[in-house]
Image (tube, rainbow, N blue to C red):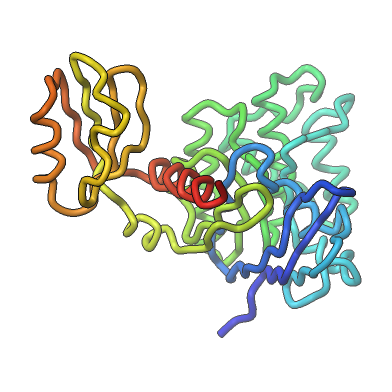
Length: 301
């Protein structure tokens, strides 16, 4: 079995008394898309900066390609493509000039791969970067990451500012990369994006990993989502203690439930109130993610 592309063990970063991340342990395997999920401020970008040796850990360590991320950073970076969440570019250059500059730094023969990616993203490489929209600047960031055909792509919120059609093209580029055996570490808070392309998912909350699971296993946690609308808001404890039923949210006269198992107990409880509407559907990754966060917050409390 091939060695992991990324191995983090006890990875910790403190900023004084503030915890960035705490005790992160996970691996990323060759050829997979590893989705790294969490809301803004959860520790996603801190994790990436530690992986790339842009900041140094307080404790723990990281290996990439079996090499120490700090001691062997030059060798590691030769095999990386990176799109940062806070993308900054040389805005006086055109996209083509920027690609040629990066190609020369990496010792590449040319920029043909970058030009091919730019065509797929419908990016004009001959416009100065300072004249580009935010979305087109994001495309330049993606093109430079794919330019060297890296063994590992580290993408921090890669489709932010992109319209849906371009997002689909980015997913195609990622599919092509993993189809060639390359690996993608994808940090995102867009759950539908991760559900679409990831093989495994890590969920981070307030700097700590909540879980690391395959998307299929995570979806196996799926419950039935029931949204009920009432003529009048039921009492706060109206549905407490019903077997297999949890109240997910309540907004005025609309209540969302998670249902696990037979619906009969919930149906009988609903019959005690005037129900004006009822929607039932299988939970998606967003529901599962939010439910995990709620449960963890409740446990902490």
